[in-house]
Length: 118
Image 1 (cartoon, one colour):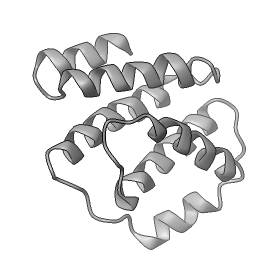
Image 2: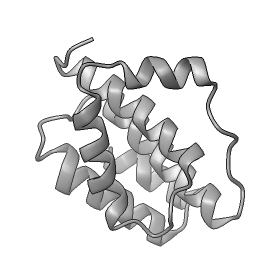
Image 3: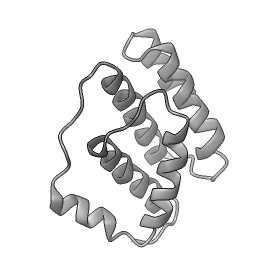
């Protein structure tokens, strides 16, 4: 994961603050929770890109209600919300709801890949 963030930084896709923030999320939350996986790499790549996008005043539209409802029905959705809050608490930007929904999506996939309920 460190290498992926380094590549994003070296190619000026993300700035140093975003790089450091995402690396801290990886070291402080993903590894601690035992969630290091390919889905976690996708989550952290999305987190880096979304954070930079927000810094650049470019926010995605809200997720389709059908998909959002599916995410909210995930058995571990409460844990998704807790982890999302923890991830975003020390962020370098404030995440709007539309971006947070995509964090939920990726975190749900991380938990599924690591043995979470469907």
